[in-house]
Length: 269
Image 1 (cartoon, rainbow, N blue to C red):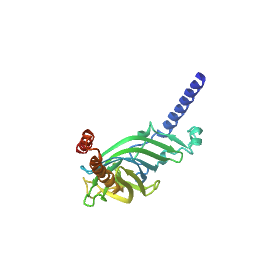
Image 2 (cartoon, rainbow, N blue to C red):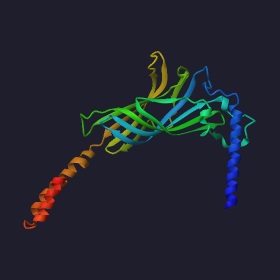
Image 3 (cartoon, helix red, strand yellow):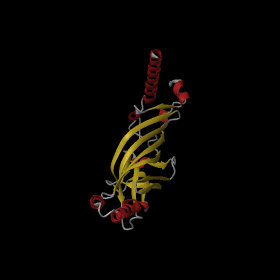
Image 4 (cartoon, rainbow, N blue to C red):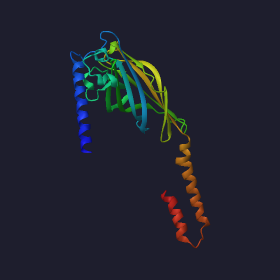
């Protein structure tokens, strides 16, 4: 067992050393401050998958969601499939894990419009042999919503949010949909049936300069309340209390404690 542990540690150390050497070769004279295609348009693929709804605040008109975004772009400067200075191990494997070195390369800064909070929970990146970079981020977003309770208990509400590319070269950026997930995703949260729909391509206008644009996309959360909640929360409990109250009349009139207990139970509830 001890020898197996030593062997595992040795192999891990060798792989780590090979990775550091490969990155040193790729990063030589690399400029992470500007897009790889500069001054041409830099195309970046994006898609968003919603994992769960963790909260809906009807009073503040907010929804808290957990989701994962996938970013993909090609950086020819990092391609290693034809680089003889890169160890064949990575060419056979086909990719390099950049989780600990992801900020050493250029990456598009993605922001979300119409959100009260944007929190990066986890983040990792992979570099493929042809120079393709896959950047995966898990987010926690608090999204502003529009609530309308006029048709309760069959009321419907919606929340819009817009991921967009925001960096120094935004006018040279182009964000396109990767189509990794269905355009409509379904899940439920308490009394709501929730669907997230990809609405298409949007340009987010810069607040500082209305002539500029930021390439983005639109997503909408549709919150449809399930009418069954009215029966679960109000009607069924009310019927139970009424039945409990009338059942006291079927108790022997000489059993005063039992009749009083049934009456007090209804009052306390």
